[in-house]
Structure formats: C-alpha cells, structure tokens
Image (cartoon, rainbow over all chains, first blue to last red; front, side):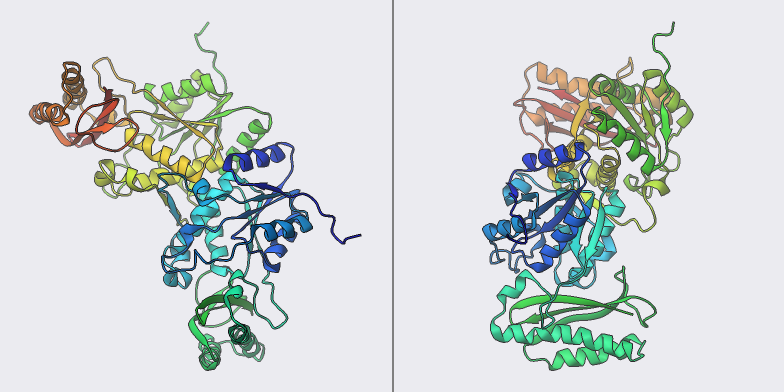
Length: 288
Length: 288
C-alpha cells in the first residue's frame, strides 16, 4: 500500500466556482486553510500544505503567478510553471482544492485597484523590488475575498512578505489568521525556492554561501556577541569573499518587525538578499 | 397604533461583536444588507435603509465619521453627530443592527494600509478632495470585512463615490452587490445632505441654484440640445449669476463612468460641486 492514499484534488480555474465550493464547505461548518503559491511546488510549499491539512478541515492551494508582483525587468515570463506535476503532488498529500486562475480571470478588464500596507513594505525588498509588495498585498487580499479562509499559510523564507500580509489583514480586518511555517532547507542548507531551478551546478554550490553566512551570524551570537555591527561585519566579509555571490543587503531585524537592531536583545532575524549569477535569492535565520 | 412598530435596534461599537452578530445571522441563511453612513441621518439615508429592509433579511447601518476621508482643512471636527437621534430613527424603521465604532476601534495602533482604486477616483472630487476616495475605499473595504453583506447601499447623490465603491468591489472580488438608490430632495429641490445643516437661512435659499441648474440642463436636453458645451455653457452662466454660489465644477459624464461626454447619446449624469458660503455641496441629475 502507498504511504499516502491518492485522493482526487479538485482543480478550479474560475473565481465563481472557487468561491461557491469554499462557501459550501464553510456553510457545513468546516474550517478552511489557504496556501497561496505561485506553483512550481517544492517541499517548502508542501510543508505549508501539510500544516494546513493538520490544522484545517479543508485545504485550498492557490497557484497564480501574479503579474502585479513582478517588476518590468523581472522573471515573470520564465518563472517555472508545471501545473500537472503540482496537481500530482497535491493529490499525494490529500489537498482538497487547487485554485489556479488565469491572469485574465483574476484581473478582469479595467482592473485598477491596489492596496499599500505602508512602511513595512518600504525597506529591503521594497527598495529592490519597487511595487512588489503592492502586488503581493493586492493579490492576497483578492484571494481572501474569493477563498475566505480561517487560516492562511506563508513560509518564513519570505520574511518581509509575512510582515506585509499580517499588516494587511490586521489593518483591513480580514478575518483570517496568518500562519508562518519554518524554512525548509536542502541537506547542504540552501533554502528551498522555485527560483533555485535557475541555478546551474556551479551557482548551486556558490548559493550555499547564504546559509553559511546565516550560520556565521548565529555562531557569533552564540559565542556572546550582541553588537549588530560586530555580527554584520564578518557576515558581509564572508559574503564579499564568496565566489559568484553579489550581496544586495544583509540586516538584523527585530523578530516580527522590519526594524533594524543595533544590539541583539531577543529574537532577531538575519535577512540576506544576494544574486548568484542572474538569480536573485533571499534567505533568513532567527537568532537570539 | 403607530404606523411603524418600534423594534429594538442593537447598537454595537466593537468590531468583534459586529462580526459575530453578522456571521451568526449568515449561518442561519439570512441575507445581510449594509448601509454605510457617517450618521446625522436624514431621509436620504433612510431611503437606503428602507431599500435594504425590502431586499435583505437583516439590515446593518454603520455610522462612522471616517477621519481618513477628510482633508486636513475639512469639516471632520464639526461634522454633525447625533447618535441618540440616529438610533431612534433606525428603531422606527425596524433596523436590526447599528454598528457605530470609534476611530480607535476601526483604526487600531499602527494602522498603515490604504487602498486606491485608480483613475475613477482622480478627477472632480479627486482633485478637490485629495485623498478623500482613498479614505472612502479603505473604510468601505474594512466595513465589508467586518460586515460581509450581500448588498451594500449607497446614494446616487455621491455619484463618484458609487463608481469608486463599484470599482473597489469588482477589482478585489469583494462578494457584495453595490446598490445605488435615487437622490432624495426637499420640496424646493435641494438634495438631502447632512451638510445642509451648516447652511444659514439665506444660504439655504441660495443653495437651490444647484437643483435649478440641473433642471436647466434637463430642459435644454429635452428641447433637443445634444452638444455638451451648448448645455454646460448656460448652466455655468446660471450658476455664475446665482448669489452666494461659487462653482467648483460642472460636468456631463457618461452614466456609470467618470468619462466626460462631448455629446449626449444615452444616459448622462450632470454633476455639480459648489460652495454656498463656507459649505461645500455636491449634486447631480441623470438626463438623456
């Protein structure tokens, strides 16, 4: 017998059908979990699905490569897509519903409305990807109007995104709980990301410098260092020396906020963004 | 016997209580109508409540003088407020629930999120009241997260606002139907508005020039005039001659849009904004 019974996952591409299916489950008193993704599902996504399956009666995964969150020079066109394989993975886990609308279905004619969540979206990714979080916030808000989930699952890997969606649902009173699940890493420490598929074998090895740098930050802190600059300095040096890695930012943030700290006095997130070849990667690690 | 049986209208000031009351009614299969207002209720508002009472099982009126939709030099502080009288009027009509949160209850600490609906909010009121529609769209979106109404009622008097909220719910997929009810006028034609309370007796008479100008537009069209400038010219002349009236704009818009027309070929909205003394008034009328 297989370890997982294969159940049929319902694939829905229409907004109206998705809404009707979810409302019908809610009327029956079932709790709904939503896992918003851009597809090309990997074990990071699947850990979110597994969390939703544990915590909610019905799990909806959305797959939507959202044009509104890509900049004009970004990788919208070549972003990896494999709906058949994604559906197969979700059926293995026993996911109830896969909502995979087209861009036309999500953004009908004359779409003009965007939501901005303010300062939490401004630094770091906000500087390097102007408009990105406006697109994220808008599509998450839209998804939650279509799929009014009790819980919505995001990965810790996109740390600033988790702050953006928390700000969004708190400020607008969207009745869902934002659940953040831990980063899933390969054996060599690289954080799972659909964009890892862009890396050639050399770049794939070079990309390990991100996790090694995050570990260095942890080691320095564990050895007693509290001063932010005394941790960031060696981390930046290590990244500067790493072959093929162009750092965009490294910062120490107070856990749960976008605020940089000058000293570690409690849970602190080390965030890194870097390019390896043409591929932009982000990663983070909680220390303190 | 009184013509209306006095029923108890439940007054709720907490977001959580309002949400719970509405969800409980929805779970019972009852349809919900929402009438968002800023209070100081007059027959214009009450006609919206009556429409909701006809069309929905349960009617929620919200009263919230929304700071986010007032400019720094506008009348937020002196805007008329009379919650006791408003509650009495709603009880007479048989309204189920009055949701009247404080500004702190609606915008908790750290509120930073705003929604923009794009071009429909930009001309006319958008120019004269910068940020106004951002505030309107944000609070309506927030109200609809708290009170997920099947139908939401607005007055035709705030014509551009009806376009803004339609754009909002269409673009974001908010599952409510926007219902627009006709303007209610006094015997002398002045459109009901809470801001009419600001007018002294002289200004009150002068304010009739708005309705008279809208009637002139209708008469010109009925007499066969199709050209927009040939209608707007006499209307602007009439308003320019009216004592105590400072026109801000007059425009002919294609009904259902914010687009100005050069000729009348179908339903057309004549919109006017003017100051009478210190009081800013808006009005409109459908011709064609």
